Image (cartoon, rainbow, N blue to C red; front, side, top):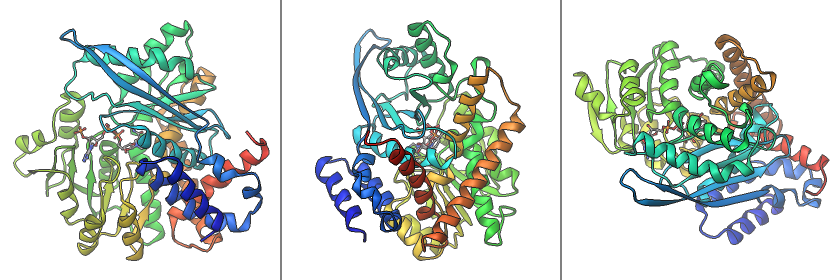
Length: 446
Ligand code: NDP
């Protein structure tokens, strides 16, 4: 392997001790772009990789708030502004107890290439907090969001850094965050956050975009290999934003989605999931997925998440969280005849699982490319905010389809050009990297 790449991977491990998730993503990305470095020695002369793996700015802050019982609570807040070579930093906010600096850096680093892949002018960033929204009242969520924004507002702006939602941050949280931002700035800068409600600058189709985009991407991939979704059995993990709209589009494409999950367990419904019921439980009641099996006699509920991958299916779409599909799960899926595994979540498959999937010639749609529809539509929301205008659902959805198509085609072609035909993971990393690298070259040592 390219010596320069190896040195930078080692340096990252040495200088960022304990940040395992960040090490893994740096290793995955840099290893796959090694063929580009072989052909372009000029990147090493300007220490391009060393600069790329170092965030331009990392902000860590205290988030104090008062719960409903009057107790003072303290959480950690983060915003990693990783790379602004091709546009303002852009990436979601995650509220989850597992959030730490390593996870923020892993997600921020991935975001650089994903955003570049969309062909739109957005840099890479990520943020969040170890705040656990589960079980909190609406008032507590609002107080937390207001306190979080009271520090974050000075670091973001529609031309500087544009956060969006992620795990634990949906439409409700974006609303509270936006309200506080507007109050602090005394200015209606709708483009400072994306994923907004439709009444105050949100884009039609943004809610659906990541799940729909995943289905557009994977259906092109299937088509290229002489298959489609019609009549296929699909397993989708999660039951949040990405999973819900992946289920919706898969059903529209004629597939039977038989399982979904939350962080407690999964439901299996051999008759095919009733999506209205899933939405009612997760979006309206904010309940648990086991309530699905309580309401529907054809379904069973199993405690624990990993077992979902033992269900026999043609297509598996992990849409819940990182590292949820390991080597053992990949082996089981493949033994059961899976034909495609498509990543809706960020880094849901472990490195070992990915190696095994690819070695067994199962189609693998990598997250950076396959779930880029969300951030691409966020960039379309920013464009509409700049114009002070809204496009129709069909217009945004058509643009989303075109973007997913161009990501698929560019990744496929780059993989072929650099001697890795059929490997979309290598292809998408190369496409994402080249645009950012060339922009960094043009802008000097900054
Ligand atoms: P949500 O918070 O809406 O949903 C996450 C879902 O995953 C919930 O159903 C949650 O269950 C479940 N979950 C969490 N941890 C686990 C676990 N260990 N095992 C099984 N299920 C689990 O988040 P999103 O749908 O927005 O995000 C899902 C993934 O997609 C994340 O990796 C995110 O980074 C990625 N992504 C999201 C985008 C977007 O536009 N939203 C864009 C691109 C990527 P519970 O209800 O119990 O918490």
